[in-house]
Image (cartoon, rainbow, N blue to C red; front, side, top):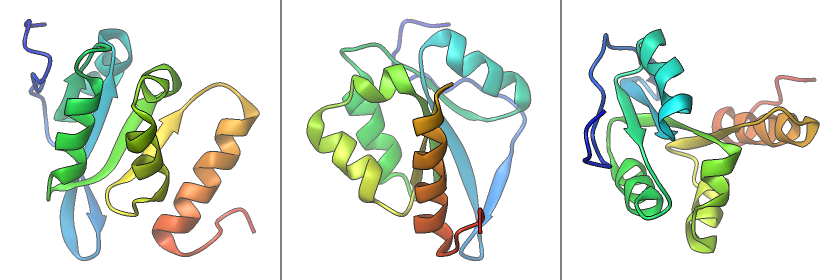
Length: 122
């Protein structure tokens, strides 16, 4: 991967139907986290470090064509307090934080409910 922290890794396109328009999935994280999504075909994959995570996150959140932003728990923790608040409250794009713990499942449930307006677990 290149030295540019905002490098988008190319790949086959995947889109998510959100509000009647094609929306992209964006992935933000370290190289290992992003690689799996790249292999799965996610085109907007951003490899970040501590010094670039906030700037990249803000650019993804301001993008008109991103419907879902995916991050791992470690990368999410590196965000500024302001950006973490934006991630938890902004509906579009919806930020999904992946983790192996049970608390993350509840957070995902709340994000889906906020995004779709429906609780899929009920």
